[in-house]
Structures are given as C-alpha cells and as structure tokens.
Length: 191
Picture 1 (cartoon, rainbow, N blue to C red):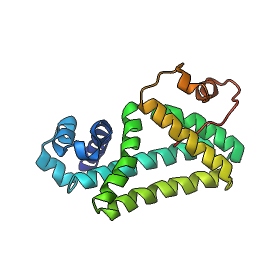
Picture 2 (tube, rainbow, N blue to C red):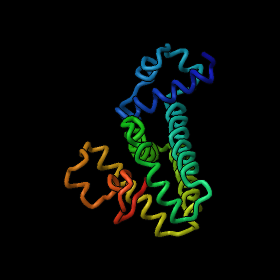
Picture 3 (tube, one colour):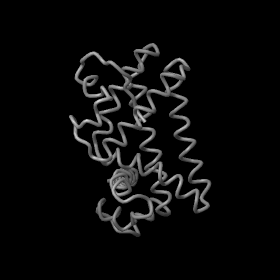
C-alpha cells in the first residue's frame, strides 16, 4: 500500500474514531490501531492529531460538496434542491460519517475556546465554501439555502440521537416519503 493510500486509510479511521469519541476523547493510538499501523508510522503520515482531524474534516466536507455537485448536475434551482435533498440522506446513513460531522462542529468551538483560532477558521472556511456552492446551485435563493441546511441539521440531530424511522419526532419531516419517491409536502435538506 502506498503512503497516499495509507493516508486515506488513516483519514477513514479518523472519521470513525473522532465521530465516536470527539476530538479530545480520541487518541492517535486508537486511530493507529484501527488502521493497523504503529503510532510512529502514523506520525510519518501526519504530524499530530490536529492535522489528522483537519484532514478528516477536509475529506468530509469535500465528500459532501462532490456528492451535491453530482446530484445537482445541470439542474435548475428547484430541481437541484430536490436532487441534493435526495442525495444527502444516503451519505449520512453511515453513522460514522454522521457522527464525525456533528463532532466537527463541536471541535470548532472547543478548539477556538482553547485558543486554536486557525483550526476553527480552517473548518469554518471549508463549511462556508460548501454553503456558498450550495447557495449558488440554488440560484442564490436564500430560502432554499436556509431550508436545505436547517432541515438537514434537524435530520443530523435526530439521527445522531438514534430516533428510529417512524418515531413521532420524524412526523414533521417528510424525508422518508421524499426518499421513497412519494410526493413531498415540505422541504428536504442537508446540513
């Protein structure tokens, strides 16, 4: 396996470990163990835990951006919104990706409180680029953009907390109907 392939393995393992235990609770030993490498080898690929987390954040946000771009294709704003809503749910059905995304938001605040402004700024910048790209796909429509992100975050929280399909907390979200192809009565989203 090449060094680049090993880096990708580390990033995938980091998504799982950071998603499970957060930035503070995750050790480089747990990431190295999941990948099947020694910690010294891990540190040849990445200088420290911070660099691993930032690489995982870039990977996660870039994955979202790419999937949304693919889904939206050459569609107009309304059609792009529907296609991107439909594309989001399968992306977060992997609990590790979902939990990492949620931990990423917490880490920005926590690291900033510890004085690591650069860490917080890098992830915020990546997220703002994602926002800008999505808003551009929606023709600059602030309502479509707001609905996409706000309902998406509600879906993230509901799934992160483990509410199963059919639980009453899902009643106001038509995401399951939307995904099954039924006519949607509300907004779908991603966050």
